[in-house]
Each structure stands twice: as structure tokens, then as C-alpha cells.
Image 1 (spheres, one colour):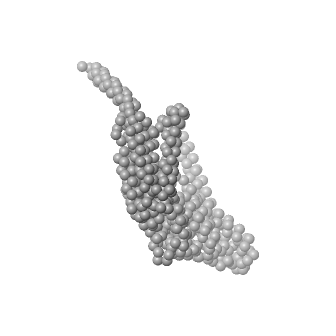
Image 2 (cartoon, one colour):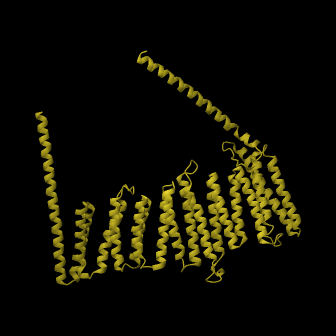
Length: 566
């Protein structure tokens, strides 16, 4: 057999197999479409279909959507208020037993209609099932709460009955994978915790609910339920804080608001565990980061209200604890989380809390020294994290810190010199490790160089007598120029010449009128020496550059001559 015939035979075999694979794929796709089309009817035939979340058809005509979906909601809302008013009527008439019977019959009737109509009226059955649990919650809630003559006078028994009803609702929600039913149960639980009006019970129910919310997210990917319950929980916490003014604190030893801080923080910690969730189609990094940001922002608002209202002079332990948690947790996320930006967010939050704690211990302006060196520590951490976000935020925070310092004080010499030192070292590290930090431009490094350029002359101005200011600035220009030679960087040369220009302006406008003649002579001599030295450097540099260009031209001409001879 010839090689060409053998190749043709192999080609035909491969072609036939590809054709068979295409036919099988078409068959699978057609079967998949049939399964999708028949899936709703199969769901309706299951025994527990009324608990499954129903989505109405967007493509249906407006009249159909209004009639099937809109009227279903409207009818159930009206029915709910009718039952509420009937309950209220018998209860106000001094017949609590009859009101209880009316409520029980109403609940049973709504659930029975939901169950028996699940095949014929799917969406209506689904709505009746939701309102059945709403009516159940309302009836049990009114047994003790919001009633002048409660049927159950004991707070703990009434709360226990409500929690049993909510637990039953959650059982069915988890069993039938109904996110709407679970979200409704979580909302009931948070509201129940609030109306209890008992601090420990309020927080315990809230924490337990938060744990169940996180469990539902982890197991069923219910991100919308997590976000909604997160917002509701923090709103209830904020209302609780505003509802309990400072006058309720009976003594300085009262631990109520220390418990509040602990539970607020514990709730935020539980929600922050979403950073360990593995990525999937339903949860992108944006959804995880948005959850962390929402919880962090609202927690910060709660913390601000708590501190300003109750602990304006003793907040340092709170922020030390937050700082330790934020930094340690960011390190754990660095090793074990798959989300890129989560460690940076927690590290930033931890260092911000550390800054607040430093301010609480040292106050202004003494705290500026520690805050300045903390900026360098944050940059070192950003280098380890390979985080561009931490580096950028740290840069802006340092600039903001410098502006605040000069606005408030600007007279502490050790701080005045620490700021340019930190700026210089930070600029060098960024230039040295910009590939590790994934920095594409020199914007961040230029920011540090600007800080260095303005703060170093200011430090000399504040620390030296007036007759030595110009001389010190000229020395700074020489230092910049020396750095440009050492690091072979043109930016330091521009800083040297700019500082030299500023020194010249100050020399002629200020020194000529204020300082003595001997110091004036010294300033002029130093200025002349620095200027001449820089001038000679540029002359040598230009000559060397011209010589290199002439050598290159000679080499090029020789190459052309040799090419022509060849």
C-alpha cells in the first residue's frame, strides 16, 4: 500500500468519526431542549413544588402578567389585611381566644389552598405559601408583642414560639431550596430580635441568624439573601444604637456597649468569611468584594456612632482589636483565599484602625511621628502582598497626613525630618520593586518625590536660624545632584535645579534684606560653588555625549565604505 493511500484511509476514518460526533452532539442538544421545556411541568408534579421559587415569564403579554402575577400579589395583600383587621377586632373586643382561633383557621386555610392549588395555579400557590408564613409570624408575634392585653405574658415563651415558627420556615426553605422563603425567615428573625428589647437576647438571635445566613450562602450560593440580610441586620443595629441614648448607661462600669461592640464585630467577621468561598459562575470577584465593602462601610458607621455616643475618650481598645484582626486576617487571606483584592482591603482597614489607635494614645501633633513611620510599614506590607491598591492608598494617606500635620502644627523637628526620609525611602523602594508591585507608571513614585521636594527644605527652614537657611537649601540641591549621579536618574537633577532656583529667589528677596553681611557672603559663595560644580558636570556630560556620537558616526561611515568595497 502506498503512503498516499494510507493517509487517505486515515483521513476518511477521522472524517467519519467527526461526522458521528457531530450527530451525537446535535442529538444531545435536542434532548436538552426537550428536558428544559418539560422541566416546569415536572416540578409542578412534585409534592413540595409550592416551596420552589417561581420566576414569571418576562416575554408574556402585559395583560397576562398583570392578571396572573399582579392580581395574585394584590389579592394576597388584601387578604392579609383582612385577617389582620379581623384579628384586631376580636382582640380589642376582649375576646382573645376567638382572635386566636380566627388566626389559626386563617393560617391553616391559606396553607391548604397553597398545597391543593400547586398544580393548577402554580404562581398563586407560591404567593399563598409566602403569605401563609407571613400571617403565621404576625399571629404568633401578636400573642405577646404590640398588644395591650397579651395572651402570652412571658417574653421568653413568646420569643421561643416565634423562633420555632421561623425555624420551621427555614427547614422548608432549606429542604426545597427556596431563597425567597429563607430570606423572609431571616428578616423575621432579625425583627424578632429587635422587638425583644433585651440586649443579650437581641444580639444572640442576631448572631445566630447571621450564622444561618452564611450557611445558606456557603451551601446554596444564596448571595442575594446574604446581601439583603446583611443590610437589614446593620440597619437594625443602627436603630438599636440610636434608640439607646447615653442616659441609659447606668454607670461607667456598664458593659452594655462593650457587648455591642463585640457583637457588631462578630457579625462583620462572619460576613467577612465570604472571602474563603471558592469562585464559581454565580459569584464573581466583584460580588465577593462588594459584600466585603458593604459590611466594612456599614460596620464603620456603626463603630463611629458607638464611639461618638458612648466612648469618645476610651475608644483605643476597640481600634487596637480591629487593627490586630484586620492585619492577621489579611495574612490568612493571602495564603488561603482565591480572591485577589480581599487581603489588601482587610490590611488597609487594619492599618486605618491602627492609625486611629495611635491618635487615641498620643493625640496630635505627637502622633504624627508614629503615623509617618507606619506609612513606611504599610508600603513594606504592600511589597509582600504585591498589592498596587495598598501602595496607592498609602501614598494618598501620607500626602493627606502631611497636609494635616502642617495645618495643625508643623513645628516638631523630628517629624519634619522624618517625613522627607520616609518619602525618599518609599520612592526608592517603589523604583526598586515596581515590577513586584505591578506598577506601570511613575505616578506613585513622583508623588513621593514631590513630598520629598517640599518637605525637606521646610524641615531645614524650621530647624535652622534664618542666616543658614539658604546655605542649607543649597546643600540640599547638592545632595539631590549627588543622588542623580549615584542612581543615574534625571528626576533628582531636576529636583536639584528646581531647589537651586528656589534658593536663588530666597537669597535675593529675603537674605539680601535681613541677614548680616558675613552670612550674606557665605550664602553667595556656597551658591557660586554649587552652580559652578553643576555647570562643569553638564559640560563634561555634553562633551562625552558629543564624543560618543562622533564615534558612532565614524563607525557607521566605515561600515558603509566596507559595504561598498564588498
